Length: 91
Image (cartoon, rainbow, N blue to C red; front, top):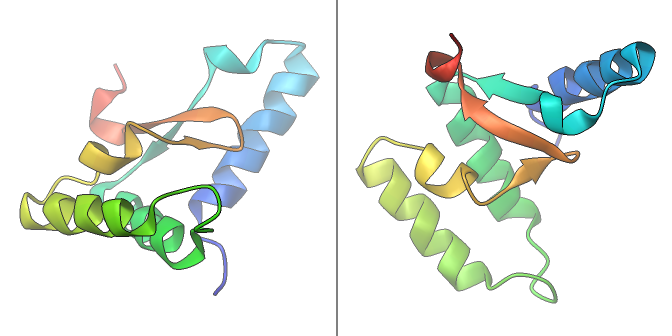
């Protein structure tokens, strides 16, 4: 499975943070709802059962889909060390 588009955005942000000599905690990857669900699906399909309870992740993604809210899952993850937020959270 190919990586979601969010990975390219995260890599660009990391490159920019390095260029600016800024700590990465000052940056966040912003995603649309569709991109958020794409990332949830990717996490689920690539989950390693040695490090994560795949059944719990599947249940969480299923609940997020039923509530149409990928942030219910994504709030617990980081992407290449960056916080993941909804584009609607950007001021």
